[in-house]
Image 1 (cartoon, rainbow, N blue to C red):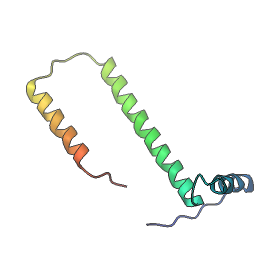
Image 2: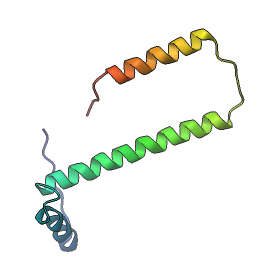
Image 3: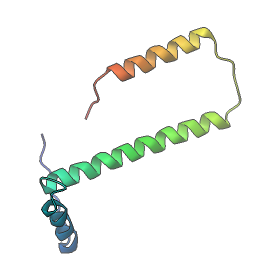
Image 4: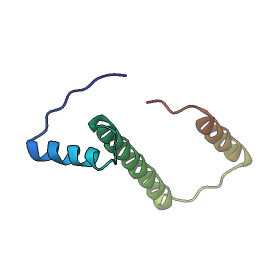
Length: 85
């Protein structure tokens, strides 16, 4: 695991310390890690939403059985692979 040092203004540091003191997180690192993961998830959801909207706004095209097989294979491979972080 890599170490990253950050500087925070006093009010933000007090806020983070308060989150830890309330027992919501075991450390400031856990709090920051969760924020980063939440941001990563939000960006993935935005990307998915954009792709879905692009698909909805694109002209229709017929899908062949081969298309469905290829999509299923790709999806299953994606689900089976461990998430890289």
